[in-house]
Length: 230
Ligand code: MN
Image 1 (cartoon, protein in one colour):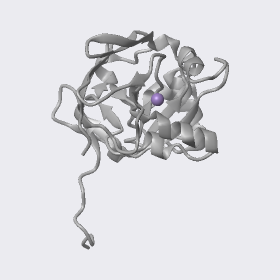
Image 2 (cartoon, helix red, strand yellow):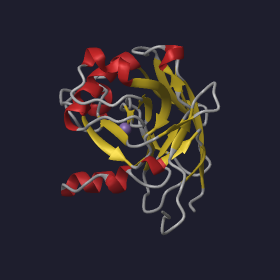
Image 3 (cartoon, protein in one colour):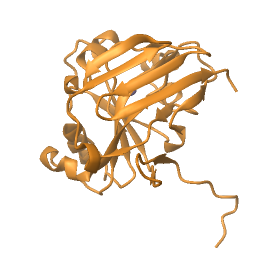
Image 4 (cartoon, helix red, strand yellow):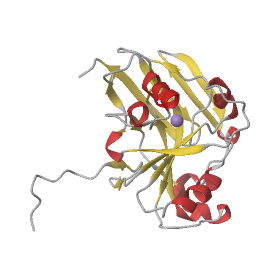
């Protein structure tokens, strides 16, 4: 059987220390998973986090040049730990969650903040604000077999050499196992799913020419430069 149009390669992330690629099925993202970020987004610091989804085709593996997207004047970075799922599961208990994890990466949940705000104000979906071309730069995945399951360690971002975000993975409201437990109540988690686990405080705008450097201790780093619009 033939496809009616030419088929594309599945979205995938490189695996650190290997020539393998990790094929990506879905990209789940947690909103407001650090208290100080909840507050800077107008929350009271006590609400529960929540999920939204980006297309796997929004990934920019290994970062590099990321084009300033159209229809925004307030394009933000959000530095996040990324978790990759290797084993199917439903109703996964938090204490069993690590067995479903392939590995970890450093990601940027790039956001058209002005379009996200319009969605919030009008009670409409967040897709235009969160799910667009090149909206998910991500480093290589580091297997849990190599680094274990990081629950603490600094997560930080510099823009043009100036620090803009710094927190600790232990500051998450929902830990990674708790996120997997919650998400697997709503979805069958599948091999190839990845989760962007939320960003610390300090989000802000970037413009063409800016250089972003995200680091998570014990996991890795991700560099992007903002390129002019396509
Ligand atoms: Mn985010």
